[in-house]
Length: 114
Length: 112
Figure 1: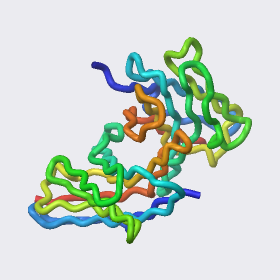
Figure 2: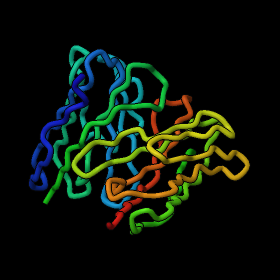
Figure 3: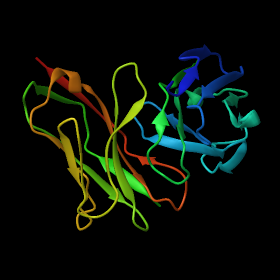
């Protein structure tokens, strides 16, 4: 069974540019989560999809961030325009069951904004 | 709100040394507690969990006991190996919302 995959593994962009991160969850997992770790700090929740619907987006930092999950399969997270403080590692996770802490994580996308 | 506090790192140990990584939490309700581990170049993996007070989670020689009276979930291993070198994250989940709340993580390096 393939795990959660994320693309790209690393992205370096300039301030003001746009970046789109992609996450492919484990097949059959309706729940998809995005988290972010800024260097040296906690991993923080961004949002949670159940299928194609946003269940909880309370962690999204501002309206420069847009997450989508068309068709309830893969998800994208777009940052437009990127700012220096957006640098960090973006993790995607998925789970089959709603409301559990056992989540399967991808390797993360390291975003560097210069 | 919910929060998790981990001891400051990094930690460097010799092989076969005893490991303790402290974790305390603040939460409303009755959280489930987790240790996740991130090996170099990989995603986070669930290491162990405990869902109620006095439960002990264990896996790969690691153990942690859910202590409600001290709001703690310290991770221990009796004899670490070089292959245990990784970043360890303590986390909680309450089910009242859908998110894991993580500590800052601690980097463990084990030297031969």
